[in-house]
Structure formats: C-alpha cells, structure tokens
Amino acid sequence: MTDATRRRGAAPVGYLAELPEVEARAVLFLRLWCEGPDARAEVWNDFAAALGGEHGREALGAFEQLCAMTTTEGRRPLMRHGVGCRCIGADEAAFANLVAAAAEGEWEDAMLLATLLFRPGRSPVVADLARKVGLALQRMALRAAHGPSRPSGIETPRTLH
Image (cartoon, rainbow, N blue to C red; front, side):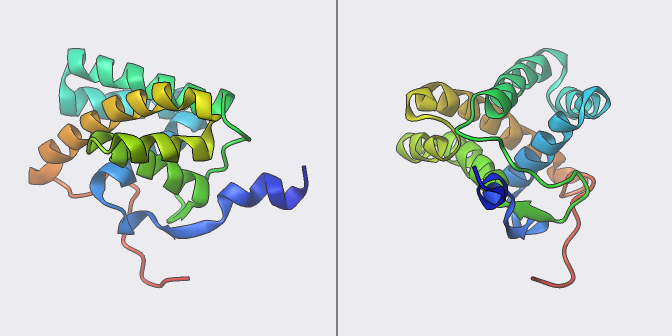
C-alpha cells in the first residue's frame, strides 16, 4: 500500500460547519470516540444529556458498535481529521452520509455508502447500526434546536479552500 493510498480517505472535501446537524454530530462524535476514554466520556455525556440515561445508553451502544466496526473491520484504516479541525475528510464524509441516509430510511443508499468503508458483506449490519445512530442524532438535534445550533467545536469557516 502506498503512502498516498493510506491517506486517500483524509483528503479534505468540505467543512464541518457546512454539514447538516446530524452529519456534523456524526463526524464530531466519531473523532471524539477515536481520541480515547476521556473524549468518549464527552460523547456519553452528550447522548445522556440529550436523550436521557436509558435512551442515551441504547444510542451510545449502537454508536460504539458502529465506531468499533469502522476502526476494526473497515476495508482499509479509516482516515480522520483531529477533533478541532474545521475540515472533513473523505472517509468522514462517507461516514456522515451513511448515518444520514440510514436515518432517513434510504436503505439502498445506506447499503451502498457502507461499501465505501466496509466489505460488501458487512453492509446490512453497518447500515442498521447507522440507522439507529442517525435516528438518535436526529432526536439530539431536535432537542438542541432551542439551544446552541451546533455541537461545541464546530465553527463556521471564514474562508474556503
């Protein structure tokens, strides 16, 4: 595998602030989850605060399964940007689109998007987890409508690439 192939999924394709709420949260939470235990606690706190203990635990369980599969069963290593980075990489965009499509009930699109990150045989499991996560993120976004419109750490860019 060449160095360019290993980094292919990190190519910037947009800005976090340009994503719809559900997709922005999916990317930010993926980044946090990959950062380690302290950052994972932030994800849990966000799920629990928005969804309550029981529903938050269910949503977090689906999210953790999806992230674990993403980092261990992917077609190649998932490339991501740092937690504070304003850009989104190609792999992160694919992840965000997968979660959004699944949450919207676009099953065929979700299955196709899953094949960008996983082997085709894993697509049904991945799409189902993405649906659960996406629906939870939709509920979180609705509840946040009366508060800040974006998760912390997501700023509107002043310039484009």
